[in-house]
Amino acid sequence: MRVGLFHIACLLVFVVAGRFSALAADGDKRLLLFESPANRLSKSAKDHLRTAIGEVATRQGLKVIPSQSLSAKLLRCDWPGCLSQIAAASGATLILRVEATYAKESFKLGIELWNSDEGKLLGREDRACPICDEQDLWGSAALLSQSLLERAVHESKAAQRGR
Image (tube, rainbow, N blue to C red; front, top):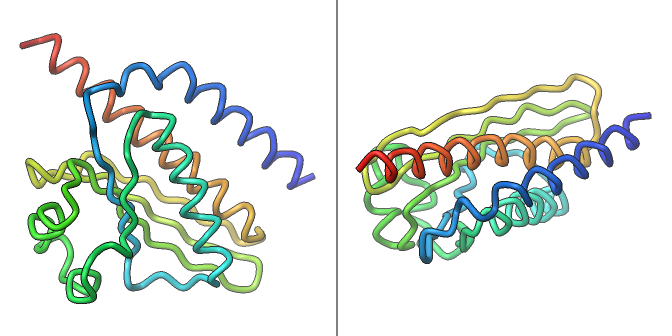
């Protein structure tokens, strides 16, 4: 049953993303996918998480920059105090910070979206599941990222119209 719900959720993400992808076309916006040093995931889970979030961001018209492109010092920096340094090193205008743990059929997931130009938190989404598999984790990550990015794109377009 859970696999069926995951597939339905993914389908909804793809359908909704298509409706909003035109809104994000503001030139070459870059999104840094920043993985928290506190993450506790298998290599496979990390790869699937990156892929799921990357696909959502790409459909929003964003160029995804992986956190592995940053120096080891920046990867371990004191968040959010190092936001400007991370933005400068990556060229990203948006930073999606992911904190996730998975252990024995349960996960905790927190995703924050930051505007690096303003040093402002644009939104945070959290989800926990006591009886879920890794596939549920990255599916949830895609859905939460989609929600945050849609709001940011919508607010950006509204602000541009108001100018």
